[in-house]
Amino acid sequence: MTKHSEVVISVKGLRKVYRIGNEKVVALRQIDLDIHRGEICCILGTSGSGKSTLLNMMAGLEKPSKGTILIKSEAIEKMSEKQLAKFRQRNIGFIFQSYNLLSALTAIENVAMPLIFRGMPKALREKRAKKYLKMVGLGDRYHHKPTQMSGGQQQRVGIARAFVGTPEIVFADEPTGNLDTKTSIEVMHIMWRMAREKDQTIVIVTHDPEVALYADKVVNIRDGDIQSVEERPEDDVYEKFIKPYEESFITADDITEAASAAL
Image 1 (cartoon, helix red, strand yellow):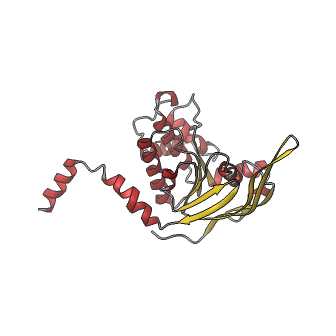
Image 2: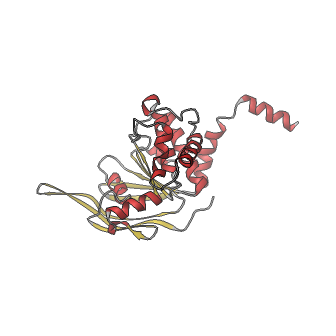
Image 3: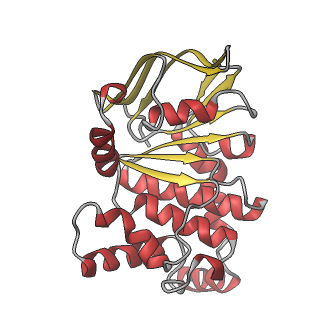
């Protein structure tokens, strides 16, 4: 796998100050960061480090106090709310720690939701939603509502919803925060695979170093400042985590069948 050179997100001189009464709280001090197309970038930090604020800035959910945020060469901090909404619908998907599924809707309806805003006909929306639910291993949960699914299954629905519109960028806020270790690994594997298939960029915010193992760029943030940026070859992630995970699902029957075919 080859590292891409195109910068899809560029943050320069980013600063965020909140006013609480007469006091100023500096959430981000001076952030400079480039994220390339096709990268899986993990922003790693403890509670209060500024990682979620940085994600919100990049997603256009909050305005910076100072600095610029270019996504696909467009300065999102200068956009109006209407412009931002259209920009996000075209280019960005979201995965949330709390799943953020609509409880009254089925898995298909939740996944198809972003496609409504693109004006896609209902039949086509449902067909596409089913395709992505199959991709995350929920081909038998089309008509289940969130209360009828486990936390891991709900997060898979959330992943399918984030990727169904094939956005160029997916922002994931603590995507494994409510999951056990086994389910967290499954979720990270699904996200990694789906992003690689379409050459999409994922920006993950987490406090969990285990999640950071799946990234090819790890940004360590503390007290509103970037402390370090670690980059690793994409092949390293595949060889160490993705390939062993996939191979662990090879059954004894598969091995026997392969051995017989080789004779």
